[in-house]
Image 1 (cartoon, one colour):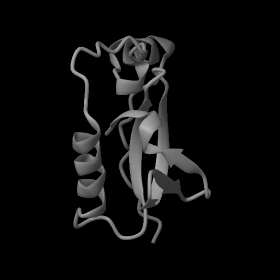
Image 2 (cartoon, one colour):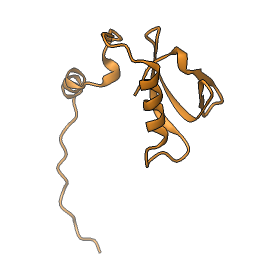
Image 3 (cartoon, one colour):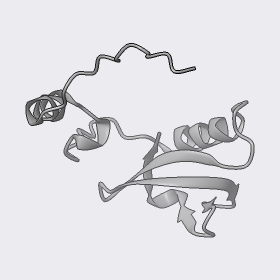
Length: 104
């Protein structure tokens, strides 16, 4: 059982490689919050988007969403339900639909 196995080739990781990865990596949240809001979303369209989130087949108890507020702020939340004029988060927070510009 003392057979010698062949060496495994592994490349050296150097600082140049990680620099290249940082330069060419792109993520949606890396972009600045300079959204062009040319099209105003009405409340009925927003309510249809919210209803479609809750009627998806992968929705069981909570849904991960990104909320874009009217003041330009983006927040990721986990919502569990809708009541009257607000969304309920898993933390028990109320997010009023009138304050929301868009949901993704």
